[in-house]
Length: 401
Image 1 (cartoon, rainbow, N blue to C red):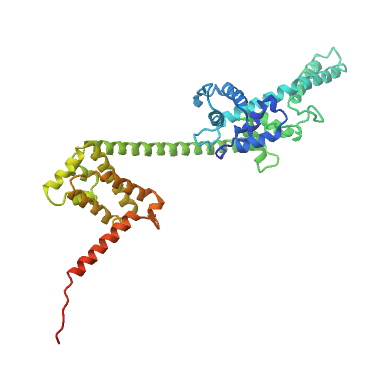
Image 2: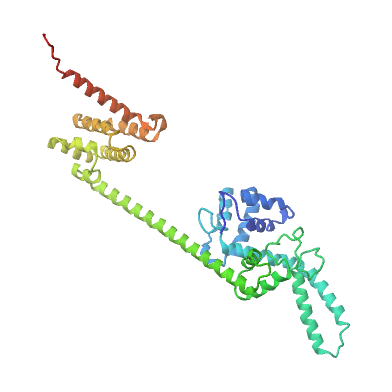
């Protein structure tokens, strides 16, 4: 699995991308740039070529659910579309092993095709020259020679250009761009051949050989290592699946609760109905604490569509205020609003008050040291009124003595 930033692609993907663009042949610097910054550095024409190539080689992977882009798609949409091929998740953090394996195989095949013709010709010439020294009457020797020639040719096909010997597996990284996905020596080639027959993938085999603690590992050691890695990868995939499932279930539960709340609000028409939804509301407590006429006031508000939506949203903001700032700071403000609603017939001002409340909760300029000014002002006003009332009722005793 591979991690990514917001735009990058796996290195092997960057190498494959450059190989698909003949006009970019020899521009090795482009591989590193695509790996780091993504395919946005390419032109729309080049992006279209990549789209066709990706769809062609990945069409056998049913899990991708390939959807074709419209011809009018903008460049950024094409960039995101191409990059998404190389990852298993929407956030592009987990590399798609199936696609990576496909493009690795394609690059190996392309490398083989490029060099096979020249190396096959050279190998066949060598084999023909050798056959001259073999007696024509020896059918066994001739058969052995044919096996030798086939073996020689197949090995030569994997040799990089300019290597000192067509049958030499020692890769020269300065000439071979695929040094990481081809055997570097006879030991790797031998183990690769054995483990491919067991069903393992080329790249995982080579990675296992090169990362083994044993300098000269055998096939059994690498097999056990690869099985252990597959089990770890499978366990990681299961954990990812469980995590994603858990997140999906949480989202479903949140959506269900939200829908239930909306349904309950839609059917609420009285103060009692609203008290079920907002049991701790200061506003509703003030409105419903005295006479029956005040309780009817809530019903009147709820039966007017415009006032209803504003009143319900105000109660929702009140609930948020209590969750964010506790039971003390917001209380004076909401009790004041409840009293005003109880005493005034027209409530057209509620829409303006709702916007003030929203600004106080969400806009920094309407806050003081992280606390909404609208709450602080209401609290100061209430404390001031309490002090005045206390002074007015104070009894002064004068001692005549």
